[in-house]
Length: 624
Image (cartoon, rainbow, N blue to C red; front, side, top):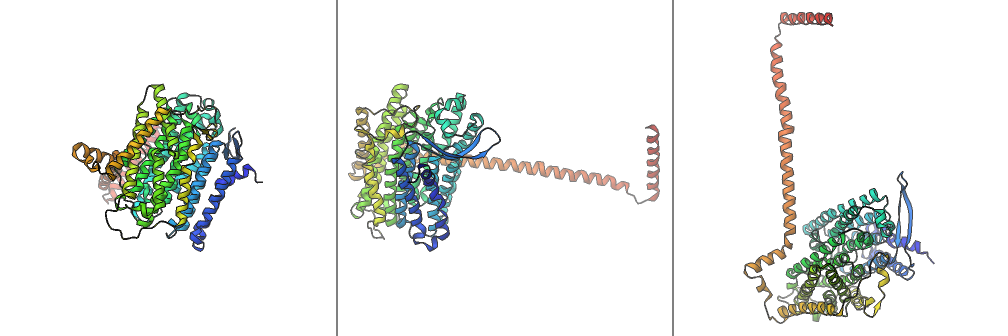
């Protein structure tokens, strides 16, 4: 039997080690080497499941000394296994496996398939390595690999200007957050003299003694999470990232890149608990992100962008949960969200695969012709909205209950109100997409025949639908199987169960959102377009549809900085550099004119000057 330590090293490194095969030999292999990618991720998924079954009761550190720095602090690299890391690698591996199987058909006719499989293998392996890393340094290495792979995958169709621009935007915006993470872990090394994850989890106050410094470091690390998880104000890359393949979007939004930011805060949660006011910042950023993203989803007509805004909003719920102390609820929602968000994206990808459009206004009438695909979207929408018995209901209920308890304790109910109102908007925008895109008849004739997708695409959706009915019960009023996976540190407080009254309120809000979408689009009891009429309606619609002008503000700042820098450099070049050169030239010209008057060409003048010079030298010699 393979030892647990060997298994832990194989899980993340196997896909990375074999990633060269598709890109080098994909042209000679079926599906561009897709079976190699699926086999490697499949092995990692099976081994992740074995780890879950053989999980030790206490954390285990499998690391080796990598570098001796000349001080007493060696740098070690390796993997740290506990309930949390085991949970995350299982989420990543199994969701990625289903998406890769789906990709066999979805991406089967694309050029550059070898490149696609290679990037997906490194992407998935890096996320699993990030989840298992035993030090902040190794976490940062895998963190950057995740970012690099996301850049390449978002820009997979790099010949399209929109895809190339989206990839560059994602790279730049996320790098802003990465700077915060980098500075944070450098400060940990300088002042804590360690990069060990175990030290930060078990002894956060003795590792970094100063509370102010702990708060500074925690917020800097959270800035990195803001960038990766597309939270305010660094969310603008996420909607544009929809220019990549839908399978890439499904993986990014469910189990890899955006989940990495939430996992980072969760992984270092004992340190955040020891950092005064840091979690308050996390809670507010999460609640505002959840609310604003939900409003943006209401006005979008691009199906993939609607799902992108829903990802931002749901990640906001997770950040809110972490901020209000409901660590367990955040991780439970991370699990459930990975399942239903992958389901929603695979359904959207199936529609795009058949119809070639992402605009919900150009879809319609799919419920009868694409039953599995439409049912998959409906199940995902119900789970996203928080309707029982689907998994999203159970985890969102815990988050809302914790937000209410936080308000009752602190006297600040604003966070609870923001998340509760977001429930209505979430249900409204996702069912608007379902009713318009899947149920209502098409508004114009189609050039392409509509049919259900092949089994290789529909089976992953069926599996995910089944999981939405199962995983919610892992933590419910009648069972708490999930609890051990969120109790890895005695410093973390338990997540309270939401009172029945609060559960009823959130359920009423979700049903209200669905009812509004049904009334407006299915029954035509009111015209949603009239909400955009009038001065106030037009301004609100423009505000929301423009993403609250964050992109415009960044463009203005970038333009101002670039123009200001250009003017300063122009002044420096023209006035200082050119001025100095011209001044030296002018001075030499004047000197030349004076010297020229001395050069007369008359020998007697030269002899006279020579005699005067000799006399002066003699006098100086005598004096000295």
